[in-house]
Length: 585
Image (tube, rainbow, N blue to C red):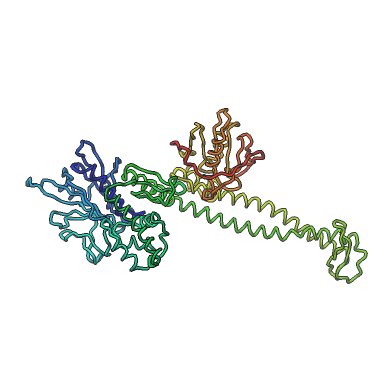
């Protein structure tokens, strides 16, 4: 989700507590639309403030991490250094619940006079900006210049007056009152949650949905429901009460930052509790800055890997679609050969009873000694009985040869489909570029990608996932087919336990037994890992096969990751791996 006014309020509170009274020690501009301020705090410590006005990812938070800056500082950075270097932060404010932060700084000019200036950080999606303003609200400069040709609402240029553009007449939710809330809800016809975020500043759609959830109504229901006399008034009061309670917490600075996860990936964050999600889906933080840093780092990792794997995904998907079409056609052709035995029986019966057929007969009725039933055999009146028998045997022989050839071809194509689907599953769980390198090497070895002339095989640095449970048992999960083979046939010992999702692509999971008998909980933990790292991750329950490693074999010339086993146990399990701890590689 984007920054909303409530998240900004939480950041402002944290910044006020940490940075007020501190001095700006260093100013850097690592990217064209990004600032990194190093601040010596009033308590003697040091903090860094990252500010980004990027159109796709505007943000602001405190961080311990540094970023490399260009050799030559951009003009805006040089201007800020001239005016604000060693300046003292006197206050940090947020107008209403706007997505705007003002850093108030006082400094001495060249004459030794005390001057006061502001750095306005506007977190407004593609309209985000960082604007440097003097005491008279005149813009000194900005990280992005916006001319009248770009925006008819406000020019952001040196010498222009600074103001917050009011493009929509929204109310300040911190000054919420029931009369105006009721008036708004009764005057529009749209989903309730949309009516809330459309008419109140700083409220995002997800927060509006949370307000409706706390008010015990469906946010997608139309505001027309409030027109109903008794039930409508009660529902309106419930939603207003939830809204007022949330704004009360925001006004008092009572924040509980948390990230919401779905299938292990971060999908939402909020500075207030999102009760419409389960507790198991939330990861709480004591600092909104730490939340934002982790959220955007994880989001950036997922996005970057998705972007870098696009070409590999396209190659695999194209090959998969081609093989699926081929497989479907072959299955249809095999179905056409299912009547081959009928022609063999016709031929045998004609050799036995053909003497009963008169010349020119179009059929012969005879006893089928396989079923002990009478059967009518079509005849070509131009041919004798023996010639008709030979014709049926020829047809049978042709269909038999076709069936045998197709059986082998369909087996090969099905193996190719299974292999490509396993590569797709590996791409879905890849987290780092080194994971993709190993998958790419597998596609090169399989002939789907041509190795560039002169290029050598890369040295693999990717390692399997390594988990540990409360009982102290260690679990290893292959990220791709090469790692699956490595874990199962080189890493695991015969008495270790092997787990895999039944009948669907997924990772091999090895549990180190160390000669001990595994508790039931450990079997379940391993099964959950096998379910989570499989194509069945989105299902409530996944069937898992498990056996001792000594029972797992690899057929000759089999595809990477492909194994067979004939002695195994099975269980149905969920995909919740929250009880396991992931160790670093």
